[in-house]
Image 1 (cartoon, protein in one colour):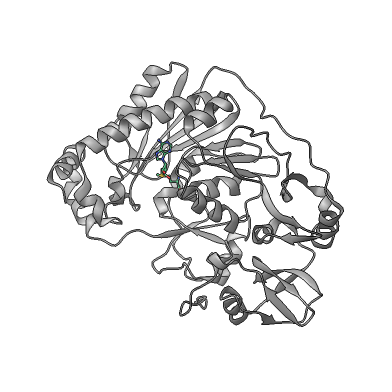
Image 2 (image 1 turned 180 degrees about the vertical axis):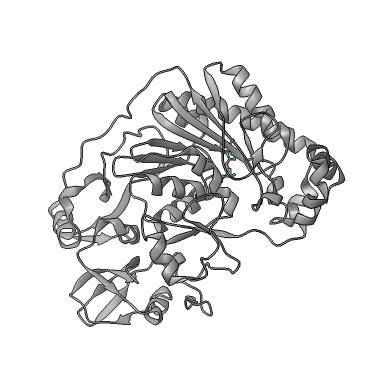
Length: 439
Ligand SMILES: C[S@@+](CC[C@H](N)C(=O)[O-])C[C@H]1O[C@@H](n2cnc3c(N)ncnc32)[C@H](O)[C@@H]1O
């Protein structure tokens, strides 16, 4: 471990330095957060007795020890694997059902999916990620979790915030940082630590915050978080921000977890606080404008699409958007995002291909649509399906949503006796890897 880094930590917490050192040899804290958009937490607890240690950082979250990537409820998006303290920033944000939220540094999406599950039918989340590879992972996590009222964009904070000035009730800046709280996870970070990198990150964080400021509406809330301990990237950035933007006010965080940071009101989580480490500050913008996002009219649909939708969901409840034969759906009007690089807005319903409509996997991942045709399968059939195989099951002919214990994990096309596999190749399990049997 880098000596200079350790000396700095010692200067921050001299009385607890030994505890900090001891924490580095302990296993990582692991956790999961229930996706309450897909399953009720009490029901999931019944199915998964392993969920017996609630997280101290947010409701619907638990400490877990074992790897659960192939658990049927993970594959179906009923939970998200998230280090427990990483859920604290969104808990502190206190998202309301109708909020319009911007997550400015969003990939891979642990906090975006957490924000989305707190929003109601009128709420909207814009998840932006600057990195063109990471944004694809973000989108696939949003799809797996079945998020409907959202957009995933791939641009800079400067572009997104200047085009949508004064539009957001809440903005999350979960900033790129030197990642000191991740050193246990990434061995490489231990050797790569340098003060130059800390200072480089601090400069970038200030830049991102100055853009985030523009996106906030009057009275809007900004949550700033990092997973690093460096004061230069945490308290110093917030002091700079408050000094630079006089209408920003620090809101005192008074949570039951973590501890007060090195300026009053901000929160720090050290590994001795039952999570790997985070810094959180909450601020409110006291002046400025309050603009509404400009909305689009719901698209009129081709007859092919209408007849597909009538067969699958109660179509009249939703708003639609079409682009080059692709169809998307939301529970609220679509947003005008012209001149912004958008990967997705809304739930991808499918494509018109020649004279037929081909549904998309994403469409069948949102449990909240109340699909008219679902089929619940055994864990063995789910395993077969996740390997791209057909399954034998009597159902009505046509497209069916496939569920495990009522939670959607994909779809297939049935001839009445067999269901043809429609799980995208990239999501299938590899040979030798299997859907976990529940404990
Ligand atoms: C700490 S991670 C975000 C984690 C995410 N919020 C989550 O909970 O899953 C920071 C993200 O900021 C992105 N990033 C890097 N440089 C950036 C910049 N200059 N502006 C905005 N985002 C940047 C990184 O690609 C990375 O995905």
